[in-house]
Length: 426
Image 1 (cartoon, rainbow, N blue to C red):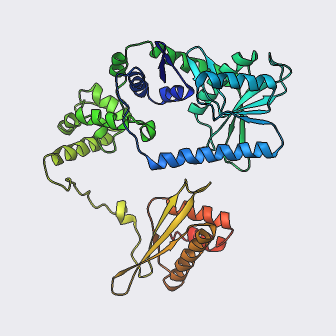
Image 2: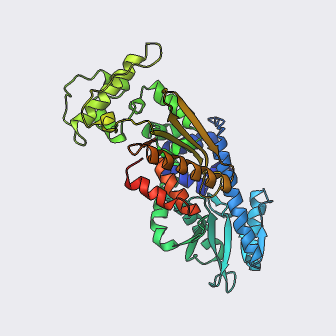
Image 3: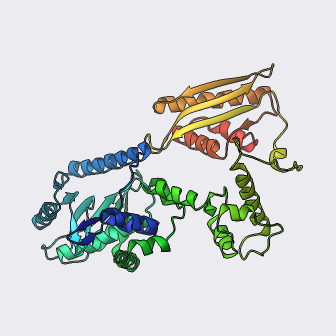
């Protein structure tokens, strides 16, 4: 979003951000008009994600060049008008692929990753172009569809003929290119585009008042997440209650509980019957709010209450301990390589004197990952042979899922893992 000649210039990214969070749109509007400074947002993981995205695009472009098609890379042009002119000139020449060109229409401006020539007549000649964007996600998200819809509309104006398709290029080795018909998404794209265009004509204060900074998934990558969290803490917002859902918050507000403190002081039994959800679930979040409220004026650690021990529930469902029990944890990085890397395998066993012993296997490459997996599997199998009642304890389903993936990827320890899964060892 940029402020140019008294008008806000909007991009495809602004469209995706608007869909994710209306409050962010208001923040970006104030930043574009000089009313607010954008906070510094240092996220090494996000930077790594951007780098992987850039590498993915370069690899795809390299494959196009290797195929013999003509390619023009315009990424070196920084000035907007020069980039628009160079893009249109390359389209008129009929270049097979245009990398990092630019398109514009009124207040909208965009830089698609690729414009690819197709044998469909247009004002350019007996050819035209379709948009392709490289994305790391193997499943195309709604934000990407909106971005490509905007690019396609601007491209249609530039070449005098609406493109039939747009394409998403993923790292999937089996089906890297996903193709979508423009007309299948055009109505939805126009709806969201017009909503954003209408919103940016309003005063930002009214938008901020209308769209509170509720926590959403987009907060994980938003530079405004810090100020938004500060607002929620200042307001003692209900989202600060651990484990509370958005539907529960809406219902509680409707019944007069606007803050964590309001909920923590709510009398029991509940003075209302919830329209959605069970009474017990609302009692649980009320008790959680009470504990958090009671902990505020006390030194750490925070207060807690133990749950009643009930047979066959909770920890009582765990099997009886045996000397052969093992405690497993994996550390993985899904950004290290395509498909991710399990870079650390850790196992704890308990000695005869009750002393825990920790063993670890580090993996820096495929060979290390395979060896780590195989050696951990061998240790588990050895313990199973010595202690038939043993179990492997781990957190959530991550370790088991990773073992299945590693077994399939490296085609090793299939029978051993199958026996462990069938025997309920995990």
